[in-house]
Image (cartoon, rainbow, N blue to C red; front, side):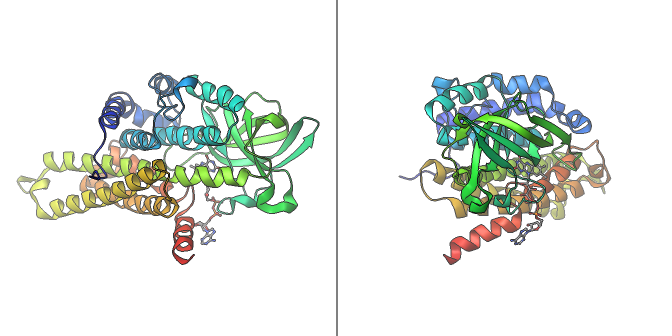
Length: 381
Ligand SMILES: Cc1cc2nc3c(=O)[nH]c(=O)nc-3n(C[C@H](O)[C@H](O)[C@H](O)COP(=O)(O)OP(=O)(O)OC[C@H]3O[C@@H](n4cnc5c(N)ncnc54)[C@H](O)[C@@H]3O)c2cc1C
């Protein structure tokens, strides 16, 4: 008999509960201050490593949890309820950096880099540049061979985790004339001469997650650090981003669920006209619709993740899950602000932050229009 989509296995359930407890007890109380300071608490980072939340899908032989993609999704969702900025750090680490090295790395690269990522190293994924965002494969960063090395030169923009990262996946072209077939993925360690983390963006939301420029100036990287084959980096990018966007969907589901539950709590205690506002049908209907939206997005995210774990086609479902989750997260967070009334518009209120955090969902890991293009391509092919 097939099981309902949201029915978790015992292992998944225990994992979800432990991440939920950690998010409530350790992340939520720090969220406001990290937002104000626009910085991740280093003590929290250490806790993420201790709990294995930076190594969910890393095989146990390399010090990881040996978990599934679905578990990464559960973790990102639960963390986003408390702080979507922390969730994106966990998302990039697990569903972009770890999965690329695990799926495309040779045994030496897996041993070296996955062990570091499991132990104490944050990873960053550097594809975007100033003139290549949606059109990512128009990137201009060059990698020129020299002996057994490559010299990489270029400027990467908008790189999440860059401030904390010890390891970067850098996408560069080894042959600009070859278009996307020149793109190559390099693993570059932070201390490599020629790599510098530049300006940090001052953002609207997910402020504790660092977003920086990464500058490469004749950065010498051994050819042995190429992930997959030279000229096949576009495959690494496409594959990882297809999965990564399901995790962004999970981040947005968690965010929306957090906003909904803050709104429910407040509606139960706020009194107007001699009653709690939760007693007004107008508010009840609003909450009901918000809950329906969260549920619809969660089902789409879980379905895409389960398809991926089962090795079944999931690209259209992933794009739909990310697109839908980004739409509902913004709407649910906005309604939550309204349910709080005036206080909802202030920094005292957790939903003010969630409303700001929601906006990024429609932009990164493929804008909403890019998701629509992917869905339409699948429909019309
Ligand atoms: C906080 C943050 C974190 C990020 N983290 C990372 C990261 O870790 N690594 C990384 O590599 N990148 C990262 N990015 C970059 C992000 O993925 C890009 O910003 C995104 O892909 C959009 O690219 P762009 O900003 O150049 O916008 P553009 O591509 O210039 O898009 C501008 C507008 O035009 C629309 N558009 C573009 N092309 C089309 C088209 N063909 N049809 C219809 N509409 C179109 C877009 O939908 C958008 O509305 C991050 C960005 C932010 C803001």
